[in-house]
Length: 276
Image 1: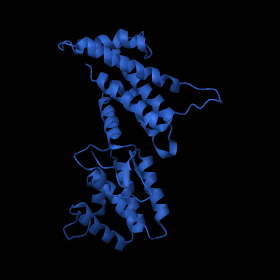
Image 2: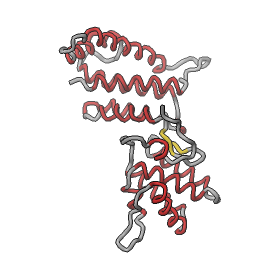
Image 3: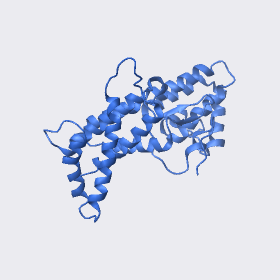
Image 4: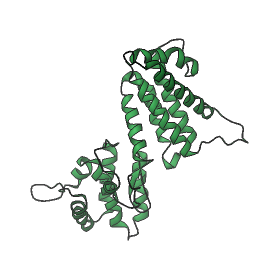
């Protein structure tokens, strides 16, 4: 069983156990480079180079004359080392007066550029939810890469943005994932008269597609029936969060419940968008 992440530890120490595709952003990298230049003095930048080589085990990029190429590090090194670099910058400032402004700046870059991470109060960088949720969401987004799924991809990306601390909403997460699933479902079934995702449309249009997909599997009917019953149960559970409610009712979804719902929805999404 994996140990839980340690507050304040380097990202590499907490999460790098095998190759993992991580969200990245050229804009975020450029902003982090400027962040590095703005907040660290020349002496602190020199110490940063030493700390990168000592703690991360990589050779810091340098020009032919030995001058450190800070821009290359932030723009071109692996995202794992860049995320760990954020912690090292903040550690260098931890005893100074700039630390609160620097921490707020780094958090702002992560949030504003849509990266799925958070920075704790001890300067460690973590996945916004956890490693498994990040893998599921990235796989779901990758599965929507075809142009015909553009609306579903946009809806899912918007849904995941509601995990950010500044605009966190369990209801919006569930609603957005449902919209993504429904949009992709309508593309897959390709029925002009079908305009919504419900139990009837699942049975009438998606189930036959899946049965054809698994035609060579001896227990296809039983397994597809069971899978679609789970899918219909998920649709039923998500429906209440798609609508408003009277003022005397609490309608915001607890975030742990919303993450569970989103994880299930993205799993179904990955399954049926793979259908030819």
